[in-house]
Length: 436
Image (cartoon, rainbow, N blue to C red):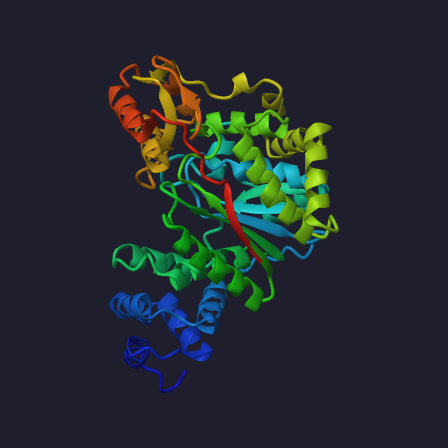
């Protein structure tokens, strides 16, 4: 807009004043187009880091980033489109379970997913451990599949929220990542641009989470729910534990195997329970059930009567995957070596440091340290114990799945990540609270 200067807006935020919607739109447009240099945007990001943003500013920043690129139109898909976002963690297999599970009771799941950077691959990497599965489908095919089967997954388009991509890269190298308004607007801009009518957020807290402290996780969850409501999306958040890995499997094909077991009703208790909690909210927001209790009953029934695993098979086959892996998970990639990690003493599991377990899996090749790294889909770690479980000396508390025989460093890392206590231990809660 005529008369605006970036230096004045930096000073305004530095001094603690709120930016107007027009000023925020001008900044994001100018930065996306290359008219505002990185050094000025860095200064603004630092001012936001120290001064924060009002709810109005955060919503305006989110929508400015949404409109910096393509906005996906899902209006041709029948029904209420509900998206789920997890702030990530170790062994976070929820999308692999939730997609087919909620689709099996009539909720359309039009999912855009990325590849992973970190402990294991992203949802797409994990699904690509199924022979033949691919996400390279056209937008028309994507919409058709969701209308037909209630579920499809496509790779993230490079045209979504270019302003966020630019700003995120800048925050990463200017020590301004940990700002609640900047994190919340970054996450929500991508969800809104992806076309969802309603959004269910799974905000992790604990050692394996981005937000280590519960108070921080609560702040982030509240900020994202506020944004969603301000811009006309039904939004709610569940704050869940990531002090230990979710489920038992950490690794791509290993997590798909665990997802299959969960969809058949034989999965780990914590993964099953979290998927039923998040799924109930998705079904309720999609108006497929009159209450959360009824939504949960529908999901439990879909697991019991085989509808959930049937939806998974249909979804795999529609995108080129071999659906028979659901009946024979040994068709998934398998590592050449398995190596048990045993307890040196009797006791109770007092702690499993999730991000250390994740790092151990990455050392095996299950994840990417850099974007261009290749992933070994077969490798990873399967835990046999959770916090609170009893363990005997010599008993395996984990198994390493590796494609190389020497795993001593990984074994040492794992042993250091699992803490034993001579006395019984109370496990942490799975869900801390719900924010609506």
